Amino acid sequence: MAKVLTALQPSGVLHLGNYFGAIEPAVTLQAQHDLTMFVVDYHAITVPQKPDELRRNILFATAAYLACGIDPKKTLLFQQSAVPQHAELAWILQCVARMGELERMTQFKDKAGAKAEKVSVGLFTYPVLMAADILLYDTQTVPVGADQKQHVELARDLAIRFNRDYGETFVVPEPSIRAEGARVMGLDDPTKKMSKSAASAKNYISLLDDEGAILKKVKAAVTDSGAAVRAGEGRPAMTNLLTIYSLVTRRSIKEIENDYLGKGYGDFKADLAEVITLWLKPLQAKIETYLEHEEELVKILDAGAQKARERAERRMKAVRERIGVAL
Ligand code: ATP
Ligand code: LTN
Image: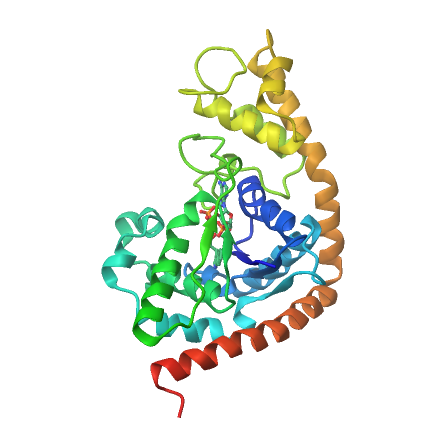
């Protein structure tokens, strides 16, 4: 069974982009693969977090994974900080990575922007922690949204360099990017990906948005010029809205376009809000039920962490030997 690994940050909001770009593909993969999936709390602290909120968000992310169909009997599910080997390997890999390599990471450039002098060093070196996450578990495939491809490529480069310099140690991973849904775009700006750190909450539909919020956001969504409900070249806004419609209903964009021949944006948007709401309702109920049983969530995470520590330690032992610190 191929070893597949992915992770999500517990940053509060999870949106449709996270769901279709990362969670759903992982749930599909868990049936036929050896899946490892975790909540990367040490990634979250690269930007300031309030301790109470972080704790709540870790539990929320876990509840969301479970509600979306991650099965802890099949999948190794845990909290990153409960496995200290991640931070340990990240340090060693920071001594393998080059400054120039990290300076090329487009996500850092986007996130730091003009404030590069003021952001945390962790935000800059975060792709190395992600490489450690991946390489500790002999991962072959990493399903992520398109924005993370460059980070997985860094993990590959670091694995190849380490293996060359210290001897065969790490499996070299491959990113896996799904064709549709890999990049759900912002509702208020279809040229940028849907993002929880967007300036306005109108950018995204959160997994927790209620009917009213969804309707408001979909109605406010940017459209393209013209009036036809049609996707395609030069129509980024409608392509995005139709893609979301198609992902939620599992119908093809062509079929949906046909339903709206001769109808306008108003009809389409009202229906889109409705199909999103109907799709989200059962998921929201499940998340709530999991959150009502906090001790269960903690138990699931603890059991996962124990197994993860054993696996991670096996790989770390080899790493310590290879670099010459094991006496
Ligand atoms: P932000 O949305 O604030 O930029 P992020 O990209 O750091 O947050 P994470 O929660 O770390 O988001 O992302 C979790 C997963 O969701 C990653 O695999 C990422 O590629 C995917 N993802 C995030 N945004 C989108 C999107 N708009 N479309 C598709 N996948 C996405
Ligand atoms: N950096 C990723 C989250 C992440 C991840 C990982 C994804 C951390 N470690 C390992 C896949 C594999 C992001 O989405 N921001």
